Image 1 (tube, one colour):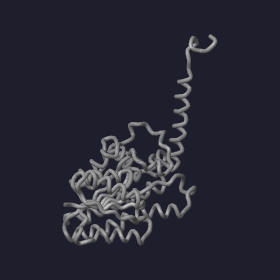
Image 2: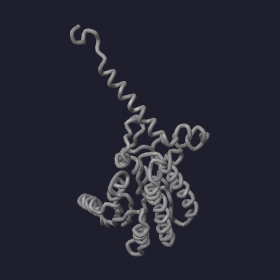
Image 3: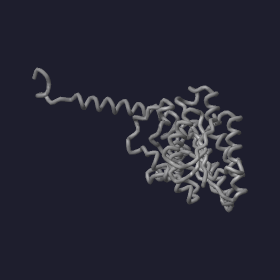
Image 4: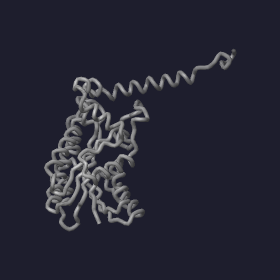
Length: 281
């Protein structure tokens, strides 16, 4: 039976990956910072699916704990066939508004962890000539929306380079580039996304299903939905001056301002009454 190791596996896309992989018969190694939540999730999955679920509590921004996860990937007996590098989080505020320590921890999770775990997994998988690495990136990597976007740009390019290096070894590397997905991600970062139209959102089950299909095919890039593939191509080929104007780090503030204006307009429309509906007339 195949085994998958999923980081950031107790919420959002990571949790969805865990459930879908268990549903297709994969044994699991679930990695997250919250040990209590890890154990709760593992018990829930075992109750539904006949799979083995191992838990490994680790803050991936801590180099020693990250190394423990890397060592688990090299186990020659209980082998890991699929690595899903999913762990990550956002920070609310501009680059200068957030303390540098918070930025460093975020970069360690979003980039260093992907680097270290991909290195450990790929070396072991190449020896067996079998395996796959799926790195969760983002279409934000094509934008200029701050350090998070920059880190996702790195993940995408790193995965493309890794895929080329692994060509012919029996091991593949895929980068998942979703757009906005309905998960806990923005809530945990205290971000209100009310300014985005409903059509821009994707559902986590759809995103994960498409990512796993693309990984199984050995596709290097996985961009779920036609609308986001189109948006990705536009962002990639558009003049950088245009991309900077549309996706500068203050885009979040602009979006919130638009959300407030829409809310006020809706309230004004609700308050409009025909003359015969007004009291005293």
